[in-house]
Length: 250
Image 1 (cartoon, rainbow, N blue to C red):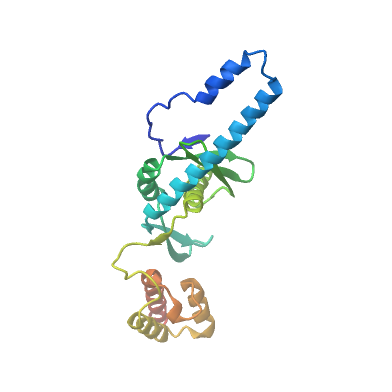
Image 2 (image 1 turned 90 degrees about the vertical axis):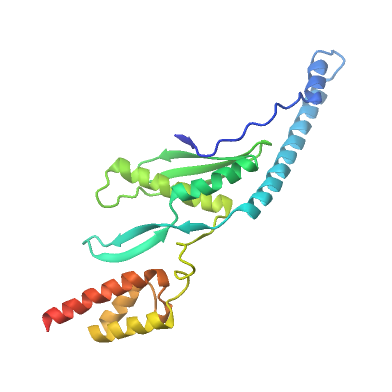
């Protein structure tokens, strides 16, 4: 299965290569040694391939100067097999990535397509970054079917397919993802005020050393000061649940 996600912009029709005219005439000239003609053709192919790669690299360098960072506007709910809420993780949605890279690729003569080869145990995806000059770069990734809650086998393959497109594109185009745009309030670790609020809630919950360690593991940090701002709401929701449990048992 092949999916083309960037349509290459058509350019002007190229003029006929004079070298092809020479080969055509030489191929019917009995005085020309066929071995020498073949050697010339191989040399021409190597020269063209090197030129195509040089044009690819020059266009790619310009593309990197234009490539912006992509915001993580999606969220994934993290749950255990027992259904316990483990918070959420932000991610960059494929539709956001495609909307950004599609016109930039077209401007520099690139097209990006994907081929998918499902097997018994994995979904193997390959990204093909092609340039109008003829050079192509490929990247392959193997993923297990993403058998999330409520997904059938076909949906699990589809989820892995979407995941693979994102991460192959990130790898091939050196795309950087950042947290949702909130004037910088979601970047980095929690503020001192937020850390103090979390500390006060922990003290009120009286979790004890073992449960506090479990809480920090849930928060993805080794100490309160390392908790990331984008996790603050999830962390506070978890602590409010713990406080309600304590108050109910009092």
